[in-house]
Length: 361
Image (cartoon, rainbow, N blue to C red; front, side):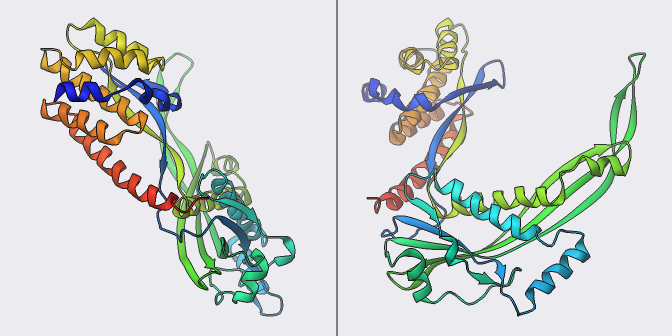
């Protein structure tokens, strides 16, 4: 088994390590690193989609009373009547930004002359007719029309007192109460994805999210003054809501954190390899770990095997990574079982990802 594992790991697997960066040390024997992985979308969309066109349908139609309701709501809550308008624009921009990062689709914003009217609040209108959908996407059946159908945000500020340590001129510290202002923005969005080829709605999703902001001061006024303006908090919350929906509908690169052993008892080679890994010399580190994986000291062998699992994962060889992680677990490493679970989850995600990427041209 040992020879099989050692033979399978080829030098070419280290290409993916270029995407890793070192991070802080968490203990005397373990370090952390980060690497970028491509995560599948939360949902499966039709394989014939190649492009997204984004459109905003959150503007209230004139003459139906919705504009007056929006203004009244703003007066009652202290929000700018245009706050949701600006925030919904940022929401769509947040979605556009995240979709530009996926390798699966291309994305554009619908032309201004295709502006759509909705309720201006969280209530949604009936779906668009297919003639309108075709006009917006140029009758291209490989293009999905993604519409922000509704957007509503509410902002409130919660005041409380928090004990804070304050240093005195003589070097001593005393506990004083500081006023804390916590701004909370609740955002409700509804999205639809229109499929002209099948004349069906591929996704209709209402999303709820919250963003928090904080400011502290000696007085309530000072604490509130250190919060962003209400429109700014709504703007930022809108961007996050758009980002979140982007992860729902498209594969995205994300950063994940991993552990590796940098020390083992009475084994200076392990320390040398850990130092190489911390400076991103994964090839040099793995050469050492590969040899130490057959060390007669079981603690050295299981730690080296654990590290070899990380090297294999970086290369994208999840089957080999699982073999190394399982080997480390069977030898009694307490971190390895959790790593096995992570790798099994990644294998499941990889299968979904391969299915989602099949239709890419």
